[in-house]
Length: 306
Picture 1 (cartoon, helix red, strand yellow):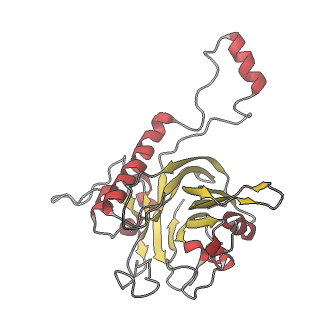
Picture 2 (cartoon, rainbow, N blue to C red):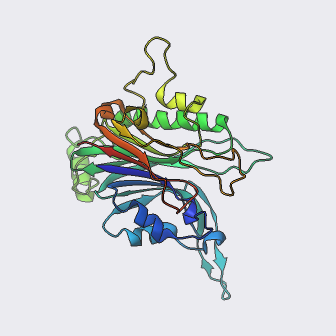
Picture 3 (cartoon, rainbow, N blue to C red):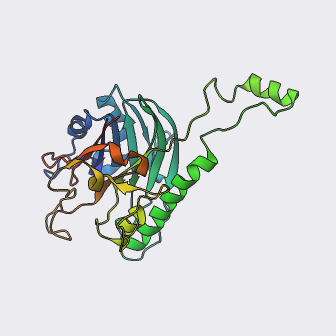
């Protein structure tokens, strides 16, 4: 199974051209795709619907989009009617297999007076893979401050740890209902004749974390190293797929400053794929595709053995 995480920067490559077709071509061989910085109805990208355009290039995939950032972009026509549109920005999940259910996490952030900061968030969803259900997250953390990112990671972990307790999009049956209520529910078919979603143990978190591999935020995701045993893969947390992979590329740099004088002035690792400990033995290979030019980020690929 191949997974890829790619911050597409709304399709803007270092050649300063917006090309969503080359984005789709880059990820088309993956089974599960996590995209970030996908937008709708921005002037800079021609007021286009990018989730719809990307989906049109990947017609054999299921997909969903979460506009974590959402503001008005409506237009009043000459006749006074309103063309309702929203200027949006957020992550996507695209899958070769059905996406059984999804929930959306708007991350907390702290307002600023000098640096531009935006609402960001994550998609939490369950993909029905041939090997069983798999929890997938696609996310984008704040680029402004470590303080924001730590709050956002805590929110992510809260959702992940609470998932088995809250259950799927719906839970429970009608065995204990009284006859009147049982008849009422049957008539309205609240389950739509579908089985209750299963919350799997296995989870993969992909996205642009805007953090370094040795920072406090990284330790919040995988745990600080213990002086005696190193990092411990706790069952309620995650491991870095890069560190447990049987094979990995030489360079994990995934973000290249564009223009090149942007801080820190050299390529660095901002994009990650974290896995639940149950998957640690299944990570065959992790690599960053350094050859593609669709964004200022590079796609991070993970191959799992199932």
